[in-house]
Length: 92
Image (cartoon, rainbow, N blue to C red; front, side, top):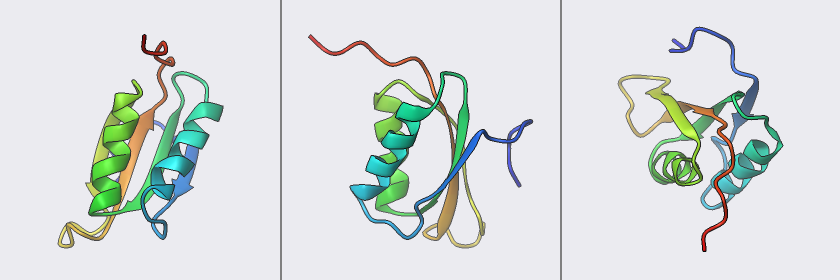
């Protein structure tokens, strides 16, 4: 069940990747996306599920939803929806 009224613009499956590659691949895709576009990411629970949304939010992107593919397996595969936002200005 996808909690979004429209289809995402991109899909990225990083469910077989480990950190930090999970966010590297996510960040590279976000950099190619236009503001307002949405990516659906398939990722493993645990460290990737903790780190990818947190890191994307720290860059200023919107985390729209996360959900487990199998509700009975909270450490299993999850889906994450991120909306690309305008880039934050560099610190300093």
